[in-house]
Length: 109
Image 1 (cartoon, rainbow, N blue to C red):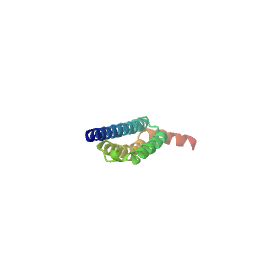
Image 2 (cartoon, one colour):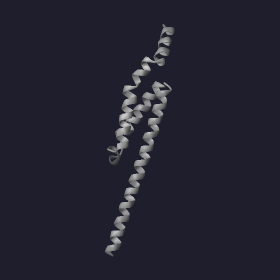
Image 3 (cartoon, rainbow, N blue to C red):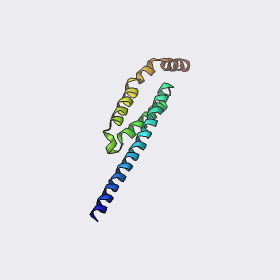
């Protein structure tokens, strides 16, 4: 009977770990998809949509499950998200997009 209980406990622990791994991988997949969408939007200079997508990604990163919260994958994703949202956006306001917007503003005035 004791052996059976140990076996059941071991099986239960493995099931829990498998579910935790599955949930974490699904969550990481959502974060990756949102990050790739944000990168694409910035590359294509769709800034209003990029701002919305960036906020959605930040919300995903802020609410990630606790076992995943301190993982290297999430920490790296936070750094990359910070970089593309805060450090590369000024380039868009001084590059071709800024020129297009300036021409539009001049046409309206």
